Image (cartoon, rainbow, N blue to C red; front, side):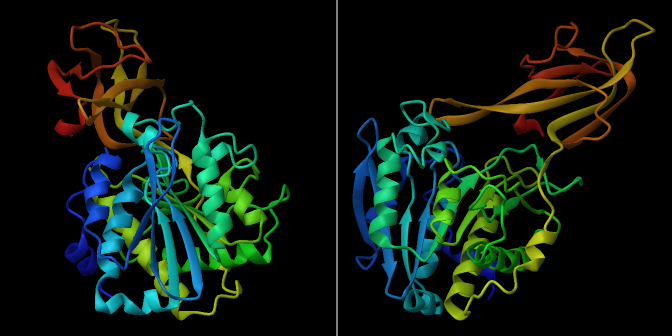
Length: 382
């Protein structure tokens, strides 16, 4: 299967960048063929519709949901790329083998406001037991009614994650959530792990050494842990950073490849969980990246000023329906154990803010004064 060509041919160009809401997806849903069964399955706190798409006629049932956290939209874009691809004759075997039930945006209020939380300021991924929020009830009802054989929990992650203790970004990450306090590798988890092993093997052809896993500490309040504890193999997908890809247009491609690879595997393989071992060799994510890392800096013109590094992380903010990235000085210290998506060597010279003042942690700086020149910290310039 030529995954790259499939994505190029079937990318949903109506969805792009980071800000994806009901406003953006409704026209695309309306344009799907009528054999994609689109329905409204509930409403959010602010009474926005929550949509679901059911497609396929196979016996293997796969439930997916995206944008449980409203500002994690990369997987939503990949889902719509998948919808286009599933309309092709070459993918008919997937729909013959599987029935898919997909919720593109579970948290439409959070998507609209571009926040992780819902309109009640609750994290839906910590509400699996209390079921205190309408969106949580919608997902649980979909789970109960659809009776899935597999669950795909689709998320996005920040730029700070590395694939293990390396200078490789965790562009895609996975987790086969625990289903008990001891994190026992149960038969259900082994099946989820085997599917991840397959996806990882596929992705290594495109993003070698840029796939990670998450710590599997058990939290029954998380949806993935809850569904896994009900003996339904559940997989967490996390869309991370790819070099110079702050709009996450490259990463959507690799999430698409992971999804298509998983569905191909489910369609053609009798999964027993026996092939789970390689999951344990996928590096666990670490928080080792800054967006910009300026090494070997003096922080004042004092001759005795010590040498430090400056780590910048971008804060995402919605302005006029566009996500902008604000450069925040996150850490001033010896950061020799960390990496930057952009790295600059100040060569032991003084680095100040644009007005010539001392840089301070926690403050936004669009520019720094380095080697007597202004250096931009903005995404657009890097």
